Image (tube, rainbow, N blue to C red; front, side, top):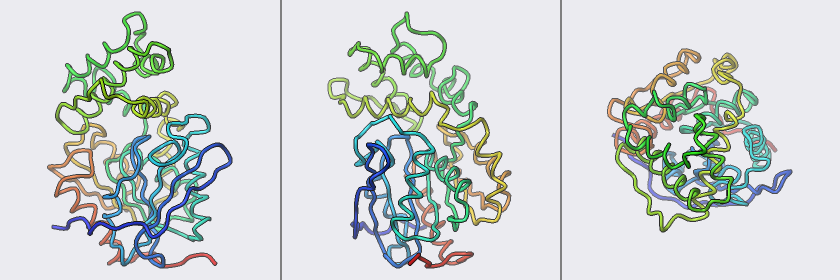
Amino acid sequence: MKTLFPPIEPFHNFFLETDSAHSVYVEQCGNPNGVPIIFFHGGPCSGCKPDHRRFFDPAYYHIVLIDQRGCGRSLPFGELENNTLPDLIADVERIRQHLNVETWILFGGSWGVTLALAYAQKHVQRVQAMVLRGTFLARLQDMHWFLGQHGVALIYPEIWRKLVESIPADQRTGDLIANLSAVLCGKDELAIRRVVKAWQMWGGQVALGHTFTPCEQHLTEHDVKQVKMELHFAKNGYFLAENELLNHCEKLRHLRVIIIHGRNDLVCPIESAWQLHHALPQADYVVLPHSGHIAQGDEMIDALVSATENLKQKGEGLNLCHLG
């Protein structure tokens, strides 16, 4: 069973200036002359962590990690203006050009899969291969599963009810995302804190499988901004047309793709990975019987590291080409 590679530090980091107020944090690790691979974190509004560098052999890969607009170390944190999926795709392409990378491998989880697929469908000539964990396709049915009363709420009805009841009674219209967003954009500080706490409890419960209880006294402005960003993308349909990612997968059928999904994933049910596999029949489809949504646990880590090692060994279409 494979484990994470030893901890490493970046050999270079910088902020990519954009055509708006956003500055995107970028770090490079591993072999600067190696095969380029870029890590897309989840969320939206999560961010990269030191362990994210460790899925890749640093002697072989030129590892690029970015904190997407408004996330992690990118500035300003939580900024929603000019923060859409097309903006993120444009940032990734600017980073590729800035680093003089001709083509690279995409490695993403959850929302990172959404970004990887969207980027690849727009810039397929720049993609060598993809490793996709915990597929999130940003369809209406995916949001109905996560937040609707007939989805995962049937498994955790008590926590879902607390999320609904965090909204003042006179503001509950039936559109949960709109209601939550309206509270966060209002001026009632107590209501905002209730919604943020309830949202964190709900996400933690569904993702981790056990009750996550944030301390309301320690909720910060950072927490509020993070939840606002998550809801910003959700209420805008993640800036995608319905089924857009599946409908354009024919552009990617020549690529080496590895789809990894935990059978016990309650954030993104395995049906999404199954549908993606049908749209990309050439892909390796790896189902982990004991894993959930997060990129932790022996089984999940083994699968992810094995995927990056497998790409090394097969080397299909992979090269060390850089521009310049």
